[in-house]
Length: 97
Image (tube, rainbow, N blue to C red):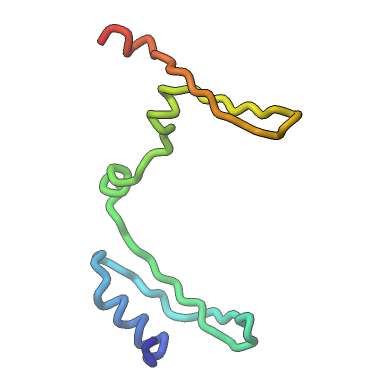
């Protein structure tokens, strides 16, 4: 663990940030931390090209395996044992391949 102050580490982080146009707003707010000490609330803004952001953000897609297989879990109420059964479900657009 280094003995550098958080301010020195923050300044280094800002200087070496690989993103251009990082903006650090002047400190205007303070917050009381859980340990009772006062700390500055530092606002940092990054400007990232919208097209770059949109093209490199993963979409919330379902797992292709989950779309291809339908799995059901069933449990025996007498012995409390469960097992999975998966059935292959062919999609209409895959049938012609």
